[in-house]
Structure formats: structure tokens, C-alpha cells
Image 1 (spheres, rainbow, N blue to C red):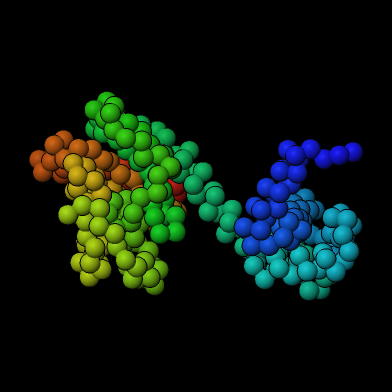
Image 2: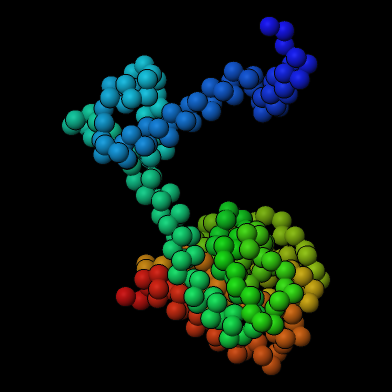
Length: 278
């Protein structure tokens, strides 16, 4: 049967996309298939608790050598481990690390709904919960107060660590090596008040830790002020920051102390809900 121009064009497009991705169409398909099989291995071990190479190969419908290579890669990444006495594989500690990261976001989202809503209603301003996402803070929850009906939507946005109150809280509580690595990168200037010097920012971060909160005034956007407090997990690790933001004419020098006090108290309450202090 003759192929239509539309079909040929579709095949050409797929080939072009595969080439742009750094390999032939066959290579791209092979890579996707390998990922799919690796995920299938994890699902098999999740269902059965443990399994040997032969059993895994049979369930995948592949040769034992293929299953062995997949298991080797997963083992190197800590996602599976092998019981040396029986030769069977089971899920490794790396799975707990990944699951823990996901659970933290889910738990904060669930526990933070009420406290965010209450704080937003009390202060009339926008309240956000942000978590660290590589070199930025990403807002995973937002509640708007009555006075912030025209405020922009920060939900899901990645914001710079050095120019936001939440970012400074998260940055201040990072392990020193990670923090210094981020401070070594160029710091973008958003306004005339943005801190772009690593030495100055380092001093500010020490102050954030000492007093238990971070404040920014027109460092990300002109006219915008914010204050943030840390949220801690059961072991004391800072896993998020809760912030209140609004225009500088409302979050002024007279009102900011009150807003700061309530933000810190709410951060402590959310930390308690996450198991900290028990």
C-alpha cells in the first residue's frame, strides 16, 4: 500500500526529533525501553519483596544478561541491593531517599493547607510554602488573604534563593558545602536592592539563622516585601519555608514586626505538625 505524504512527513518528523535528541530513532527507542524495563524491575521487587535474576528476566521477557545489566545499574545507584547469601535482589535504601523527598512535599502540602489559610485570613496577605529545588525555591502551596486579591500567583514558580525571603531561609540552613557552592555562582540582580555580593549575602544568611526568619524588601520586585520562617522535619532539618508577602506600603516598618511574629509562630506550628519537637 502506498504511503501518504502525511505519513511520510510524520516519520520524517519523528526521525528529526530523534536526531536532535542525540541519536538515531532506534537509539532513542532503546533508551526509552531500558528506562521502562528498569522501572518494571523496581515494580517487580516492590510486589514480591525480593527476586532473583532468572525470575526478573522471565517477568520482563528478556535474557538473563539483560536483567543482570539492569540490576547492576540500579544497584550502583542504590535503588536495589542484593542479599549475598541468597543472591536475590530487593529494593535498596535509595528508594527510601526518593520516597522521602516525595513524602515531604506531600506531607507539607497536606499539613500546610489549614495553617496557610488561617495566616492568610488573619493578615490579609499572600502566604506561600516553598521548598528547595536545586538552585531555586519552588512554591508548592499558596493562600491569599482578603487584601491580596490582586496579587500575582506564585504557586509553582521557581524563585531565586538570594532575592526572596523563603530562598534566604532555605539557603541559610543548607549544609555549608552546598551553600558555598551556590554562593559561588553568579547572583543575578533583579532590582537596585538585590544582594549580589557573596560576602554580604553570607552575612545576611548568618543573621537569618540567628534570629529565625528572613526578610526581603524590594529585592526581587519593586514594591514587594516578604518575610519567611523555617519549617522543620521531625529531626530538626529545615525542609521548607513559609512566607508572607505583600506590597511595601502594607508590609511597612510599622507592621512588619507583627507579620514577622505571626509568620515565625506559624512556621513553628507547621514544624510541630511535621513532628518537630516531640
